[in-house]
Image (spheres, protein in one colour):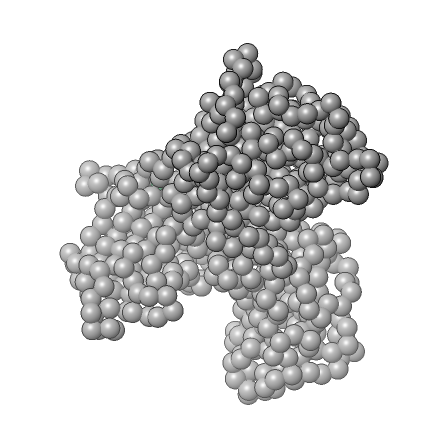
Length: 623
Ligand SMILES: [Ca+2]
């Protein structure tokens, strides 16, 4: 191996801290502040229990309550309720003043232990009830609550929009943990529930934008475009034409046919959408166009819900007969929902089957898309927390890398470069599987696992496919001293969710919003050495290689551009916290002429990339 001396004169500028204040996205103006008292369980009374919360054990004394200062979501403590044997624990919020007819966003952070196995009910369940009181504090109604899984989960969120019924003056949230495992399974399962980061916020539904009111071309099946409304003809959806949903022609239909439930058929699903994936996080509205035969009375006629794979039921709307201004007249009913996690989602339309209930189309459109920072403003703590004792790998024997291997990783010759980085090297590859959305197969599940690498290569990675937790883990890895190299490509960097993401904060570059085009450098332009740096000092720029397409990136203040292509930043390095990061904006696209050497075939490239890995990993003595 070549031993090199680190030139002392370049150390000065490298010591600059690059990590500026996170670039905060525009605020979320459609929700108000949190109305709950002591929502993060941070304020304790003299018994060490949270003020403004009422705790109850049934039978008395069987459940234990405490403020846990080791395991929490936000702040420094969480409320822990333990039910060691048969019994129940309940935690009730102080009532929040509300107005009838107004909408509220309820969200609850929770964690569970004990419970049962995945996919099996073992007699332990947990639930948050959403109840409405009148001004005197008497309960007058409830909204669908939030159920937690029957198996233990690490910190997760439950959330939904709820509307205050007429006459409601107070909203109360009550979490309960019921342990009947001894009766259910014959064996007791001691169980516990942690609560933290609870919210009740006024929701001000934005107006439907004019473009969403226009008739949209018919869609039979497929994903959701981010740019405009989609309409789903219900007679073409799954289950249409079955027992609860005869297909009928109707001159008033949006397209040609509708579905209608026969009288007396009973409760059932009329239509089920495809499983959609890859919707960008955001606030969405669904409009159900339907009509009833009889429009008087409180009886429910039909309903719609929006389900999701990883965040539970997103929304539900129940339609009473009297919600229709007239019989046999189509009416559009809106329901708003937030998509905040990867995984599939979709909608279902139900009938109560007590009268002919007719459904035409469901139209869905985004009201606001959410960048990571906005998601965090909506759901504080949802990025998870990396335990303070987890630190990036320092020992370079073996020099250990993690390669998230998307498109072009082989062109960039990352594997060759990594294997050239020492006698002993190790490289874990996380392939990216592509479908409607990218899936990172085998991405480390825990920070401990992720941090056990000297360097992480992120190549062709669509950042929107990473969860907030994964992005936060990567960002923390850098801040605590890890090395990260991010590569360009068709679905990478600014073309794949960089803007406003948690990862953007640690990168030495920023990019535009949306999907900016790659900058074309017609005919190929030569690479030029920019700022002097140990990473590029041994590369041969005398007969420079060429680059044909480069990302449109803006180096951050304090970052250093080491290579330019056509005056554009091609390789930018910087520091964030204790870590070092590199962004390669040069892509491996383009057709070189016979006389040209593209940079990825340049004889200096693999060694330059190796030196970049050393530098980002803090292995300065290698130079
Ligand atoms: Ca807390």
